[in-house]
Length: 95
Image (cartoon, rainbow, N blue to C red; front, side, top):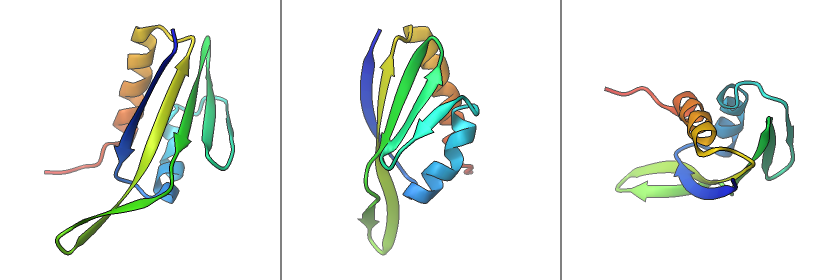
């Protein structure tokens, strides 16, 4: 099953790529200037990262990037498991 979706993530491009190996559980992958392709047998995940943008709220400036996900040959349960692990690695602490 193929599935594509996008989301905005509150990170700079540098922060995003620094956390990425942990978020993909150090799976084999290839990286290019736009993003990465993850070998998550039996399928693959393409993760493309857009240009860094800034959201201004009053005097605050918050960086974010648009991230596109494209899953190929993933069962919905496998995709949900991958994204749960991915999201936990990008979760910020708070109180």
